[in-house]
Image 1: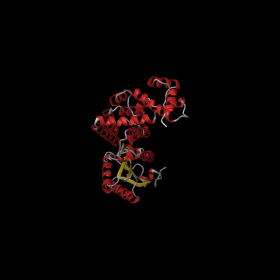
Image 2: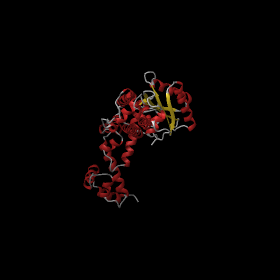
Image 3: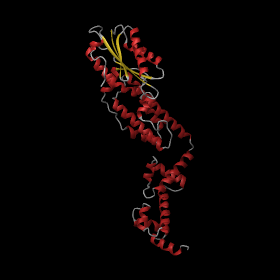
Image 4: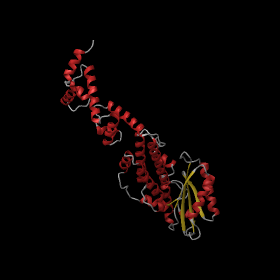
Length: 375
């Protein structure tokens, strides 16, 4: 998968020269999430090598595709790999401020046979940069811990959060997201860990939940057209993504709360009445409530307050109004067909409801209307 100029540790360092080995892997991305030019990578590679030379550490650096790979051989009792990586990142930032740098490194180990095995693992694990971001270097031990995790997420996340959003429990959603933000920040400090695929699946599900909710509310939000990898890059990892979701829910909650209740209800009623008119044959209390993410009880209260009648009464009224128009206007349409068109249970049920309301059967109404219809 990866091609190195040198493929044997003996080509890198004399055997037994110094006891400890480390590998540093660096990647650069520009503001569009793309790898910068080869010239920029070469400049950074030269700077890395010069810093190691100035630190009197035995090293070998090269480019491997889009990555910079540095092999180090040193004595950990007199050389701190952690402190050196901090200096290296500062150097990279100084010469390439317009790019974002991702750095991972292995802590010192003494088994020469592990050098290339660990190098390949670190290079493959650079994908974790999407999750961890570029604000801190990440160690081989963290990457192994993440990669080896078999922990599964313990609950049905999408339905849980979506239901709470629908129920307007915005503060609870924000509290949960804040906990997840801290959890991702604590990955560096032995927090709960999940492997790459589980984390990507998790944040993808979260993104789906918020896109679905905001879209159904006709609410404009910044990440409407972005995929999960674009967002992870833009927000610099999962912790930043949680912050984006927190800010979005907070803004929506505050905007929602500021709108007058009468204005919100009027918009709801207009949309609901249009929905009933367009779906008269299938509309029911539960179907309509579910369509607008409302409870049956709330929809009933909304109708009573704004229409002066309950939902069932209104629906019956609209069905009978439509039935009258059909009986008057389409002579070829049978009573049975009209019953189906307005969503009555059966022709006999329609006839009973119609007679109770108007004191006459649908057939008789049609005959009388034709006889008395003005020329």
